[in-house]
Length: 355
Picture 1 (cartoon, rainbow, N blue to C red):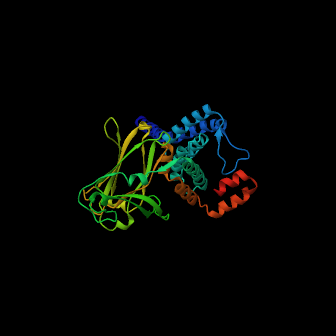
Picture 2 (picture 1 turned 45 degrees about the vertical axis):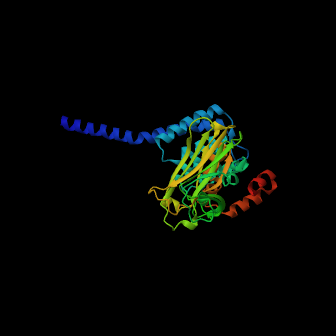
Picture 3 (picture 1 turned 120 degrees about the vertical axis):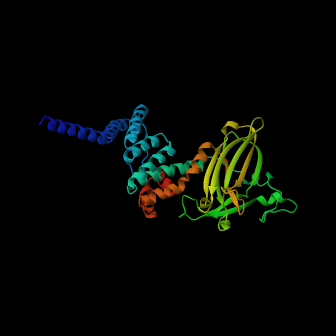
């Protein structure tokens, strides 16, 4: 009898331990979310009256710091629940850190894909990112790159850019690719100013980096016309050569044959350590994974000098992600038309929705 009671006691203890083990993440998640709630009430200042498109401001920075710590803990304990991600995104919205707000709301969308409120707020975050990306300065580099020095094999290629007696000229030229972004195949492709660069080759551009534009943003892709020609992919590279010092690889992306069929891929490189200095930018394309440069009709699209923030925003493709989030929230153009009409009596709101 005693041994039977001992066995039952051990089973009960084991059951309680198992329940505690599996319940602990949920309990700690709930505890941290509960602790964050009052802190968010103290820290976030919402407009009155609060509308669906209202954005909070920082009311109490210390309270928001503490709330964010609790929300981070909640996410650690239950990384598959959308609620803490969404609340943390509100803090980043208040701080005007729209990239982190969008990132948090993307996580929330991942775990609540049918929640229209999450999709709506993600769209708002991307809308602000898009507006910011439109406000930063950009300088197109394509006109300068097509005149830069070309380093390429002496073996000519059959391309539209060949100049008599200059085999290297066949590898580089100014053109336009029309294709969608790889992440958004459903969106129509638009003509994009493109620096054609057949592999293997380099383009060397000396320039003095302006203080207000210490970054470059760009797109990378295969000429859609060449998709059936058998390219095995390519490697895109950007180096910087300071006047004094070693050459530094700033950016590298390997694109295989499957990726080459998908459209544009965005990228950027940070040049801020050389702001105000005379450097040489080197754009390179190399053969793909199989080492085969046949049909490597690749190009760099929309190459721009810009701010580091502008380059980071462009890589996120905020306008397209805004539309994607709002579609996922089952919003249609009619919703926005109705909202604009409703807001017509308030000029500042109308101007925003008309944009």
